[in-house]
Length: 150
Image (cartoon, rainbow, N blue to C red):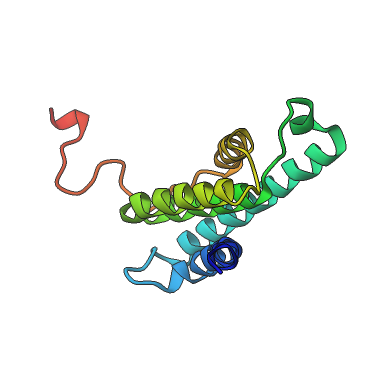
């Protein structure tokens, strides 16, 4: 019974994170103006496209199998969405890191993937996720001094 629950939990994480990523623009406080929301959505979509492009290249070229590993699309998907969400909502960063780590631990414990599969897939996913820096985000948080003020 515990194994069935754990397996179901592992299967639920990615769709729930995808739903959160899609609902993110509607969550308060607002991400900003319409162009900011579109930049966020485009970066998230490009990150997902990037991890599946890597998966296709892996199938075609056997990149992970040459190293005795297996590309974890599940890990990559969760990682790219967590990176996109964390960049748009910096206050969520620790919770998102915890979700990715706990998810990774769960799929490792269930035997879906080895540690090398998980780590390399997460690194690649973070690397292919485009950065997003909305126009209305200041380089320096409000109230902080800029280098010019020092």
